[in-house]
Image (cartoon, rainbow over all chains, first blue to last red; front, side, top):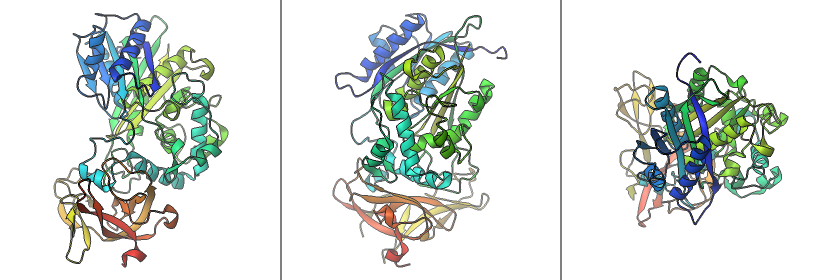
Length: 381
Length: 136
């Protein structure tokens, strides 16, 4: 680093992702925060700012969690940036530390997604009435275009699910912990062609927490090298901003690539330096698109990467060793920080049977409503 | 004719022909939809109102098999993107709900479709129909 203040991740904590009828979002946040603070050896008076990522939590979600723990009085800011809420909160906390304003910050995410059909304030009532307001149809259109442009098939989509669900078997905090075959995926209910039920992640519940502190470069640790957030450039009709129209988007750089470019530059690293990646797999095609947007493969290189197993555990660059959102489910505010928790375990060599060997550099990616894309890069020191 | 589902995005004439209302920025050379205060692609504030073409080619499509929140219309229904001659890719309902019966680049026409609201009252929305059905 160039003399700038570094930021370390000194503690992480998770409440498992799933469905928990007996618990509120606050209950889950309390569990994750206590675990992260205990791991960091940080208590009341030891951190000077808190950021709480949530999309559906409502007013003062962060205060409700920290109020239960007697940890209020510091500034507490709720952060909403769709699926990228966790990455956005992490970036704000890292900036506060880099500026010298605070020495230690708590970042956590909580979510209890509504069951069944999710009603989002993102859409106008007329869009709901017209049938324009559900997410899977847009994912399906994007999947159809990707299959056509990258020379992929529905079988390739099923391969992504097969990979992530195989990883998820080894994650005790995941919602789905059974392996599935490609044939089973292709036999699951057709939701919106070409997407089938098991190719889509489940919105659910959970919490995650991360403690950041001014880096102590004299000791071993895990550095947060970058936490970048970008919104979209206008023009792409099928990006996560879900516009009513777009134009030929050849040359319009997608938000994930913008955020990745910022993060690679801040970290002084490139895609070839990565050892492990957690990326947004809202649906199977979304992961395949992320591979090319993050520079893990060339556009159209997905089929070869799938065939070689490059991004499976044991491959050249494992992607979503946690099982991804396809295994864990997606509690929006907690999902990005959940990726960071996974990657910290990976960098510590503490990921158990899903451990990626020799991990030094890790990348987390989320993209969602807004559009908002976040890219986080961590390195073991 | 039922009321428009939203004001300002389209007009329907006495014969029931629906026309999408867009904008054009001479300085950016680009059309956009819905019509906006400025060109959404460049920020130029020289937008002039235009009526968009009533036909285009099919660019992406699917069928929605589960009823989204707030939607009281038929299921399954077609949903997709049609590329208009102005270079715009517009999202809309597709009158064909069987994806197998559609193909990339096929000619589509803009039509008016009526949908029930949650209050039961009918409202008109734009949709795209294969041109053999639409009569263009």
